[in-house]
Length: 127
Image 1: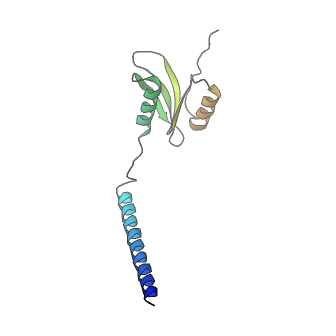
Image 2 (image 1 turned 90 degrees about the vertical axis):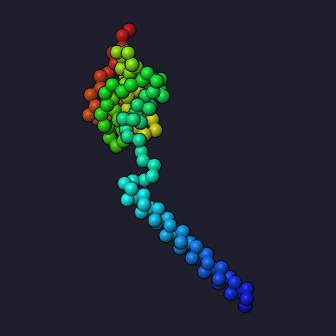
Image 3 (image 1 turned 180 degrees about the horizontal axis):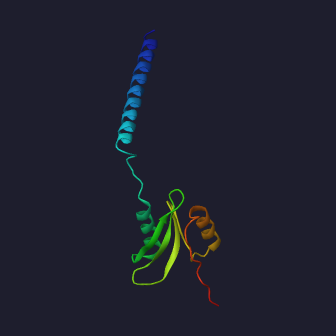
């Protein structure tokens, strides 16, 4: 009988602890919502694209022109400081593709899907 009482007491304590944990989690969620979003805010698209461009082109990479695409995509042109040449890009949160990419079909699909209104100039190929 004493063992049965101890199990019931253990169950009551466990339920109380879980209740307090749920209330604490609810408080944290409420705090995050009233702060204006999750604790880890997303990087704005232009900053993200600039970081991606510099990872691919080096520290001299810069955004020349950009406009918002579908969803969180950013479409535009990037180049190196001091050089006139620029390439088109489509930036997504985890990926960036350039018009001079070895997979032109993949870039074209991404541009059509995420940047349908983007004024893109096809590069000229000279023989």
